[in-house]
Amino acid sequence: MRFSGWLGSVHFLFASRSGGLKRSRVGKRDRQRDQSAFQKVEGLEPRKMLAFEYVASYIETESPFHQAGDVATPSLDISPQQVVLRFTPETEIDPSSLIGGITVERSGRANDPFGVTGSFQDVTVSPGAIVVDDAPNENQVVIRFANSLPDDTYQITISGLTTLPDDTGAIEQFNNGSSITVPFRLSLGPNVVSVVPQPLDRPSLAGDPENLTLSQDENTVVVYFDGSEPMDQASVEDASLYQLIELDEATAVEQSSVSPITATSIGRPALDWRHHVTLSWLIWAPSIRGMSKAHAFV
Image 1 (cartoon, rainbow, N blue to C red):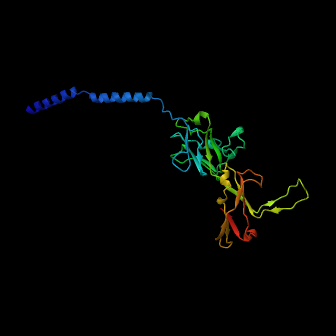
Image 2 (cartoon, rainbow, N blue to C red):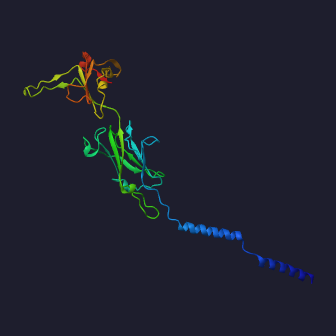
């Protein structure tokens, strides 16, 4: 019959084609390439993190005041509330290693060396807090100071810090176990620490131990500075830089002002000129002599 012959022909055609089908060469090449790439990945060593090292220090600006490798000691003209230490990117610092891992010291006098070579005793600064910064900045340590830092030379010592364990449980030591110091100088300028109007003089007991008579310099005022850094003597003794201002006691309104005729940095008391100056007026006004009104020095 025709139908059976036709069906047989169709069956023969499909059977012959299906029997001749072969795997795609492109597919085979893709599988070979994937297998080769997998073998290469298997052969790679685990990625090694960058060394745990110091990078830079910051205060209130985006620019660092000190960077790794700097030799000179930077000078700051403001007392920072905090210092941020930045370490290698992607490092996650272990907060428990901060205890004893970071210390702050000052030399006790501006530009005085630290240690036994210095003339003054080193002073340990106790910060209010030392913490690891919030995510994603776990590679930074924030040192917050409890009090304003005085004019002095400082150094931050970093040692003993460690990272948090990685996926394999490995912990890395800071700077391969060696410590480093970050120096900086606070140059805040001299400050007035006290003002003594009409000071009293005590007689020397060497000549007459029985003489206890006190005398008062009614026309002088002694101004004491903190002596944190050397001052220019000509500037200290410039009388035009000082004023005695008379204020109304009730309203604090300025009534009058007068500058001293002399400003000397020698004499009583027997201190070096960098630490004090004695201001003298020719005549002390009666109202001032009686201290009946309030006064201010500028």
